[in-house]
Length: 66
Image (cartoon, rainbow, N blue to C red; front, side, top):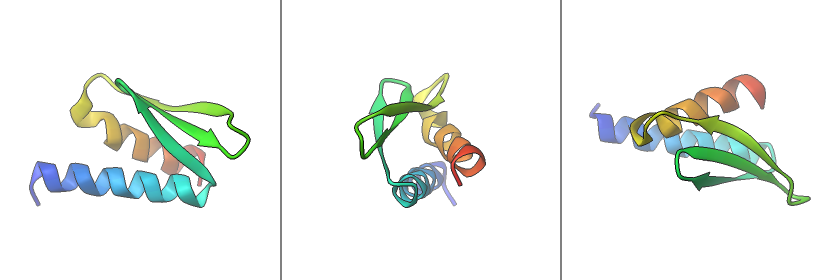
């Protein structure tokens, strides 16, 4: 599997996990936030570079929010 395909899969899985937790994901620069139905936000992940952003967000969602 190429790097680009894996990055896309990580992003899609992170989005799915967030939806299952009733959150929308927002990306601001190199940070990913979860927005809840009451419009509150929580920092999900902060990354050193864009290539790792969604992987880091996926790992955080698997650990803290599942």
